[in-house]
Length: 274
Image 1 (cartoon, rainbow, N blue to C red):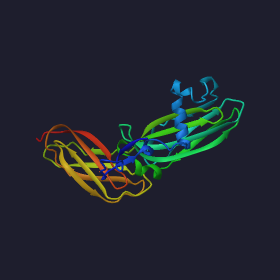
Image 2 (image 1 turned 45 degrees about the vertical axis):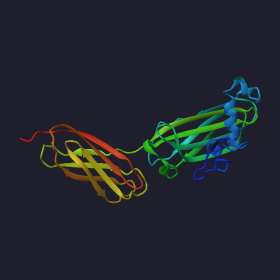
Image 3 (image 1 turned 90 degrees about the horizontal axis):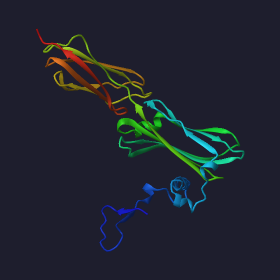
């Protein structure tokens, strides 16, 4: 049991201010998730194996393999895929849980995106593939900074109590802003900056706004922009007046209600005025 103090309640002589938060860290006792997690934990403890009938590695006759994902472009679907092969001459009943969730860059869980569980029979010497498809509508509103996703898979073989678990993480990639300054910028003379990218989503973007800034090139500028249609090419240009000569960097960002933290940068060589 995991307890903490309940907010806004003070009971110095009793336990009315006690709050049970066990369910936030551990599945309910006896549930499918709790049993799978327990069996997985038992495998890593020689002492615990004395109290549970667990198969030796030589008797584990079902192979599991989580297909890893390197990266996914935002707006595209992806799938949690597990390849399973029964190497025995007997039918095996597989109990499995697949899930996908967003995490912070520190590894702390953020939001559960999608989860599925179930049992199925795997015929002797047969192979199957488990697949959990995640659409952009499933994950878009649940992404957090850096757009990192983590896949979790856990399975057990009922006949042998063989257990397996694996996880994988990958990044959902956003497009970059293409930042360009036309011609050769000169100190004190107007130059045109262009910012462009393509909306990767099959939905409109509203409350759109560009920002750009660069020490020696321009103070922070905010440009309100019209609504962007699904998969539309976005293009905006603006005038700036460089203040310092030499190599300068300019950074641009785009944000909207539906899509945030689109960034881009460019380095330009500013000439002295003659």
